[in-house]
Image 1 (cartoon, rainbow, N blue to C red):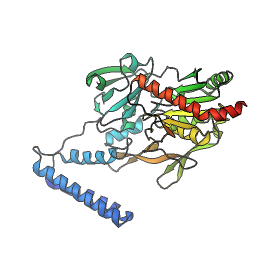
Image 2: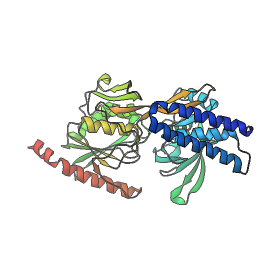
Image 3: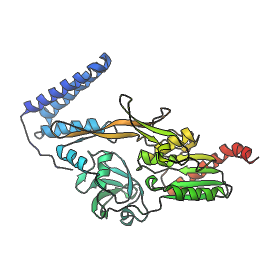
Image 4: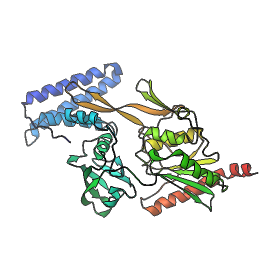
Length: 402
């Protein structure tokens, strides 16, 4: 992250800035009602008091710019994982970034408290070859601390041109917070985008996506047809630990199983600013006429959440597992007069029935908890889910067979 200059100014400058913040905040609450105005007024007074105490008691001369920058960053980061305050240099880099084909080192991540939590590592990727494991914490990307970066910013820093490298500082909690520094190359993922297996004892097909953005329709449809030819009528989608796909990728996969208008992106005023329609993509939604279930967990996010919501709404899929992450908003860059900018979640996705998953996530129809993160625990969660899925669909499947 760009180093911010430390320029010391008289105390009166900081007090003037704090008064300006007070004025702006109070002015912004006038339209919210008396109760909201009074509550915000108390918080603004507390904010000014904290500034005054810092000036009077901090052992070193405070940097006014750094203090106010910290306040801005705190306000934005407290909203959701997308919120951030960008300096002019960071704003310019944000607008420039993402152009052309950007690839990463092969890790899927979610935002933690000042770090990125590694959810999964793509097989055969540079990250896997470097020994990065699920559960690791990425603390720095190149020379940038992740303390003040949003999830969107951090992902941008992980990505770059194919063949370029990125240096990561990691901690491994399961090994006593072992510290590691690795440099990994960025490259397009080459791992298999999904796995389709069959639990013969339970007569359930299990579809486990690894990358929703790379699930080709024809090959998947062919494999599903082959499974159905064996007399399998139940399909479980295992969407655990899928945090990275876009909402549109999730909707595209959902369109294989159900057709029609799918998702609406709405701004704060409720205006539709984008729409995803499976009919526009020319897919019939007949990939699986039998029963469908979905298994999710706390690392099921964004596109995987969209896929879950759509299968539940349009395919009457039963959702098992644990509450999902709750990433259903789209970040927007709002530029300020000095060239700095705010990164805000300015619009949110919802189904045509009005179901949203942003912040709160999706609650499963049947909770199947896992007590730990080891593979044995995850396998046990899958096994229990399969048993419940078979039991719940037995009457329907028996009637269909008759």
